Amino acid sequence: MMPILLYVLFGIAVLFNGLGALALMRFPDVYTRLHGATKCTTFGTIFTAAAVIVYGFVRGGAEYNTLAIHSIVALIAILVTNPTGSHAIARAAHRSGVKPKGAVVDRLEERS
Amino acid sequence: MIIEPIVFLVVAMCFVFFTLFSMLRIGLGPTVADRVVGLDTLNTMVVATMIVLGAAYDQVIFIDVAIIYALLSFVGTLYVARYLERGL
Image 1 (cartoon, chains in turn yellow, red):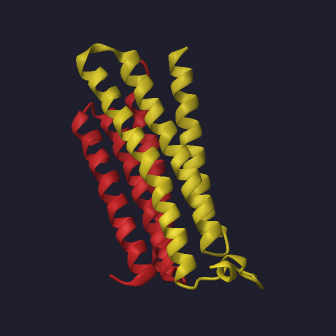
Image 2: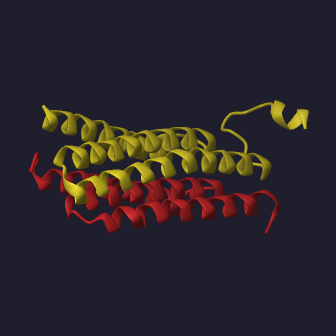
């Protein structure tokens, strides 16, 4: 039972990180690239850490429980920092004058 | 031993292969913001690789390095974004 759960978690992680890399190559401008890459890699890294947490707690023993607890801390760090960083990048790109591809009007610029 | 250790190494090799795409985006991105997006993706992918390798080699210190790498790359991303916005 437990190996199947680990294979499923690692499969979801590799699939979503691959989709993030693909989005980084195929999308046309900064904002869509940021959308695809950040969301997919955050989700994939959460599932990677979840697989290592399940592995550590199932394996048992003091050393593997330490591995699982440190993986929980890494998951919380990724979960807090990654969307905040992408928000800062998007705001900086908008304020430094990068337009979306094919945009004709910028309502966010008119309001400020 | 509930799964073979080669599974962790295959997953880590997949992540390293995906890192090459973000290096390509850093190289040929048209604007500076594209390069910052590629750098952010690369940092997240390196954190995932370090977590998997820590489970593969049974080393807790790799996961500690991953935590510190995530926090430092967050600070670096915030400073680059602030530089893009209004200068240093």
